Length: 356
Figure 1 (cartoon, helix red, strand yellow):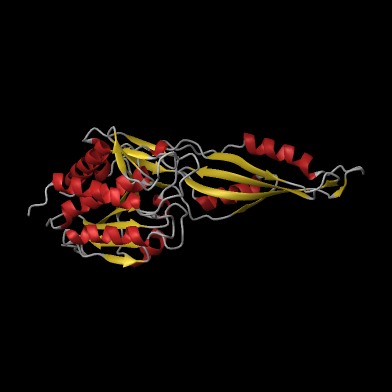
Figure 2: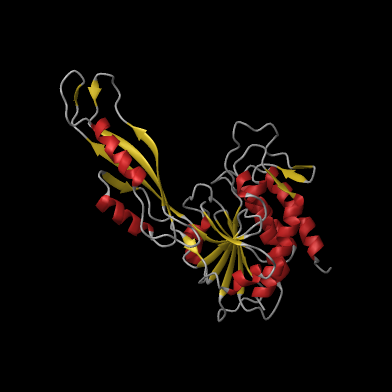
């Protein structure tokens, strides 16, 4: 039987309904992994598995060629308390397919899987294709794509499937979270104290509010530094010896996370300790052939402030997928059925132009 795009689209939507019906919180994606394996194997694709990461190579994989990675995730966050619909009841109302993970990132995932099947048996492509449906994206876990990448062949370019309304996110901000400490002298509240850590924090907060990094990205704008948590003291009559702050820094593609840490540790008027430096910014050359292929279809480019598994990649990558990121993690999450249909069509047309 000839595998038409219409058949692939129909099967992809069926798969998404199945994935929604199976709870797959981060680290608990084994059953959705099974469903993804079944989907690919139904089309004669030989699959491999590491943890709950399901991956496959195109039939005519050639080690002498560069390699394109197609990646999206099949784990979800837990449903929030504002849900009025059953998060695991995949159903369509008014053209909307409802269910947890429908938009983030189930629609992207099944669209990429259908696209991979479309190209699976094609010969004489300019690039190899690896499809990777991975777990633990939502919590950047140890068994996520970070565990899979070391066992894969060298990746030259990647498409990461996240909801972008099928426009091309050609850059994505990185993230460094800092634990900051403002010191002072602990004392009884009744006694004089010219080194009150809480009062000392006023100047530190003002410095953090006003600080700016010099380099501004064309795609991502400025580095954004935000104080998000503050904690101090546990008794009304004791001046605390220190105030703890949490600082969220969204990093543009002009800096590495290490550079951001070095700058703040040198210049900030308090002790700053980064929790992790691994969630780096990512980008792709705006003149890359993959981007040009998308632009030729009338798609737009932009810079994304939100994180994805792009942060784990060292190659050039673009974030692209059906759905709208503003729906992610929302109550009664949904994706329009026609967004999936359009997503598969644009993925296939973009890669047809790129892989010639």
